[in-house]
Length: 400
Ligand code: PLP
Image 1: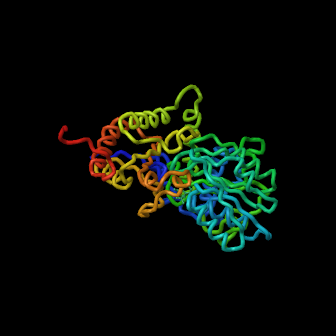
Image 2: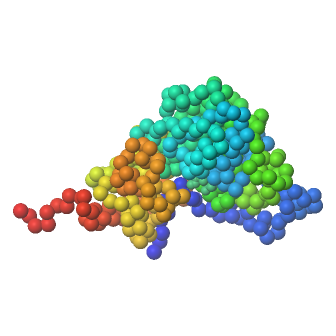
Image 3: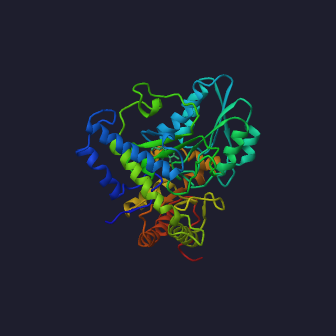
């Protein structure tokens, strides 16, 4: 059976060119980037080159990039690195729709005498600047709002939120795991994101391997390390560099930089948006009692989160999986949990509707044929599950 992958927000496939760029660093160039011999210096040069590639994508300085083990570590480093040693009273603001990497870190900080405020979401999944204005205080040290949500794809007004944080003297962090390489990001001192101080990147969401990521840390932002050890990464992240992973992240940044113009053209829907819109519109036109979570809000062009009332998302994920289509109900990082998605419930969905929601997230490699094949499966699978649902009004089998 040919498999169709529509779960790119959980992880993306590794690009062959990324794999090829990494390969020599496993087999031949295995030096430690801290060693002074030639093999070490070769590894160091590769790490420096990758840092250049990422800085080029984000329009920032190379010294502002800190390599980490992924999005989770970058989020934790941003929060703990700026707040754990902050002078009291310290206040932190984040939102109800963040990834657990931020929400669980916030929970841990709240046990260390950091006061935490969680901003609400609108029904569309947006964090409004007015909500931040109402919550921010002179003692607010950090504000963290994700750039685009991993479940709904809804894009937040980051430049406006960051400007509010700065006007109040707070630092601003954004988890940009779902937008790096998808949206143009300008972190230069005069760029659109000039007020963003810290920004999280994860390799495996941009066609690089799992277990590698980075944190952008703006010059002059004081960041305490979480790991104590060697003086790697300018004393911001101890530990021998994952050279092959870093090379892969750099290559993926370079490749996605070449896609940005194409993926963000303004003269009509881009290729990816056109595929996503066709998938979404065809499902909406064929399936009753179904709708888009985050409808009307700006969304990243690959993501469609749909609710199918009267079914359990988990059952639909399994039914589609058996037919060869990989999708996700809620966030993959929470799979196994039976709780409805905290993101969808924060948007005001009932627990039943949140449990009936499925995320389709396309990758740069998704084809028009795959959309057609998925469309041949989805409405039929929903209909079969609804036939088994006690809440679905079945048409009378025998005419009256
Ligand atoms: N932040 C967001 C928005 C994510 O979607 C994810 C992964 O799903 C993470 C953070 C965690 O990244 P990583 O898997 O690299 O630790």
